[in-house]
Amino acid sequence: MKRPLAYIAGTGHAVPKQVVTNADIAAMGVDTNDQWIIERTGIRQRHIAKHGETLASLSAEASRQAMARAGVQAGEIDVIILGTATPDHLLPSTAVEIQTLLGCTRAAAFDVAAACSGWLYAAIVGESLIASGSADTVLVIGAEMLSTIVDWTDRNTCILFADGAGATVLRRSRDRTAAKGVLSSFMRSDGALTELLWRPAGGAAEPFSPEVFEQKRQYVRMAGREVFKHAVRSMAEATDRALDAAKITAADVDLLIPHQANVRIIEATAKHAGISMDKVFVNVDRFGNTSAASIPIALNDAVEQGRVREGTTVLFAAFGAGFTWGSLVARF
Ligand code: UT7
Image (cartoon, rainbow, N blue to C red; front, side, top):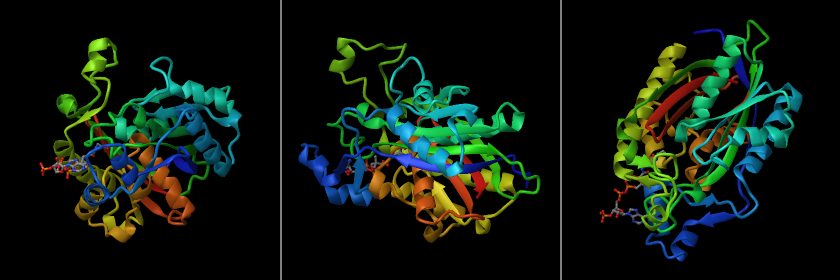
């Protein structure tokens, strides 16, 4: 096992005030029902942004909490990395807007596009910047406003995706004997099956136009069943690879915090890894699938519930559009 160079010093999360239940979605005229959504996804409710709540404002709120818990001042942040698929603006990055809201005047800030693996990819980049000596303190955020790119008449997607932000502060380990920190990580991508989960228009290849809006090509499209199969396979690979790299086994893991895509994918991942469900953190029931935000929201939720404490070994695993997938083992 390598000596950890960076550790997660603080966590925070923020979600929109508005709670939307499964019954609320059915009441909007979507052909679905509470029982189907709970059985097939595990979701009971989610938070959906209303006017005034932006990706940057939620991210800043989550970040302030993480920075306070880490005991880090705005001027100490070297780099801000935001994993998101739903930036507030296409230009510039939302990370620079967050930088301004937080007053992190000496930081470099940029977004990472890795869909639901966004926080995980951003955390690995952050750890690498610390390992290379480029940074000491990195604010790593995962945040989404998926409600803005979902077709609210498409029952394949609108029951699943939601809004929220999670933040973590990564710091250089000063204690050379410290056992806490990032023990291993793994990341992979495969662009061959992009169209199973994508947002066809709105980018440079197909800018917004009356035809785009007519055909609803500005919204996210997902072949749910296909994506499901790839998610289960890739999350299984991810858990194996991070455990191998950390030279530990599933028995050494105190808590698995997977991307909160769907409780059935989470159960399949845990089963493959040989981790019992009492050691798996699930909050998809309350927050839905918040893509890049789901792992840092779940981590902060787990911290607040006392399930992540000093000495806890956590295995993170993610999968998302691209496809992208990855994993990370950290000891707290
Ligand atoms: O975040 C990372 C990337 N995303 C994911 O990992 C999501 C992966 N996919 C999924 O989570 C699941 O595929 C869904 C939750 C999207 C769908 O669940 P499923 O068990 O794969 O359902 P299905 O698409 O195979 O549909 C089963 C049945 C179909 O009816 P028939 O053909 O059996 O009569 C659908 O038409 O359920 C029907 N159905 C619905 N019924 C009520 C599909 N969506 C709904 C719905 N409400 N919202």
